[in-house]
Length: 283
Image (spheres, one colour):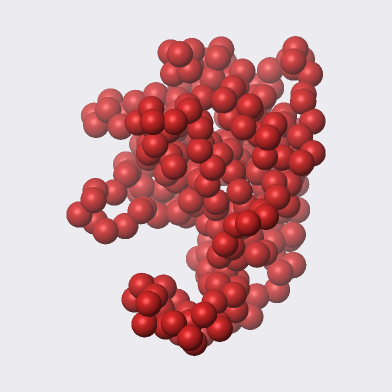
């Protein structure tokens, strides 16, 4: 979906996210994307990987097109004030998280993207509030994967029993594995921790991807770690291209993460940021 938008085949496309399947391909392709607050976009007709976690979001050539798509896919989309008041300037940076999940190249790209923001007059302040659930990223990632893979296993139990040989070996391995029980309350606990950590900031600004785009020969779609905490917490996020890597000319993207339910305000912020700070990228 993201590649189709990037190639100009379509103006927008839909996608689903369990860990990072909206934010990551958007970052690698250099397009805008929205992953909604969990529960706000209907999932009727979607073959779910994890009913507790999955969301339906969108990719688009720019944030204004994302907004047009959002009006269609949300049942309760509320159009924000077109004047929008003062453009929020204060953003929170989860420095410990970024350092933990990103490769050296991704950290360099994030630093470059933050520099673009500062040059445009935005303040990225390192979050001072303790975030113990997020900081123990290895445990958080393990809980999330146990939760989503156990739900995949439950959803496919009968089909796998009847048609096991037709499954990809990688999927079959997931369906045969055993998983620790996960308290669904961990998702709400992380959401509360992150929203408290935001404090007076409008949104988190974070790397949109933990690694550089993989090569076809790598046989992978890349590491979804940069999106995992926000997917677990069910918070809305917008991925926005902000420039190009000086060495490779590949897209440099940021991820903006807001409070639960604040999808409209977050997307309006991203659209105005795109227009005022990075106009060449939205033309």
